[in-house]
Length: 251
Figure: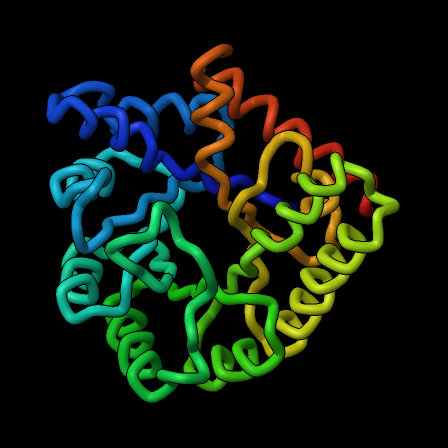
């Protein structure tokens, strides 16, 4: 069953824009759970531009579904994750100047280091995922490094879908989708679990949700954007309905 991981980072982005205490990401996590989100995702960035350490501590105390911590593979972040013990940690690349994560983690280029990080997190009881591009070498390296999950970067598909105005017969869209499908098959064949995310929204999520074997979709910005107009609970329920309907068609 394909599940929804709700990323609440941008609730904290709004809070930090005024350096105040509202809106509270903890409330967002509660609303998300009531709406049926299966996982709460946050990214504790090195510059603390949105989610901060106290948010993670409070979420760990209150979230009753899976808590997924996106993080860079730095000593500081590994120590925090080992201390707080979220159910999942997703290792992502991180740049101070980027607006959001711009590409997948280079597992192949730093396999020894990441093998050590995965081992430390796993020993602390944290299940570890790699956010990677749909690349055969990166998937192979993730399996060797001991990752339990791979989250495939769906940005290229999403951008092709936008440029084609949602035309699923467009070759660019079909090629982008096929790349994700083949990556998912390789991940599963390697004994890892297959997730997907980045730039997914209400117009493009259905083809990804229909891919056989995909377990979780991690989505944030588009849901928060819709929530401005319809409320967070309704926005999540709408996304859940799209995922469920697409998965049913895929079956």
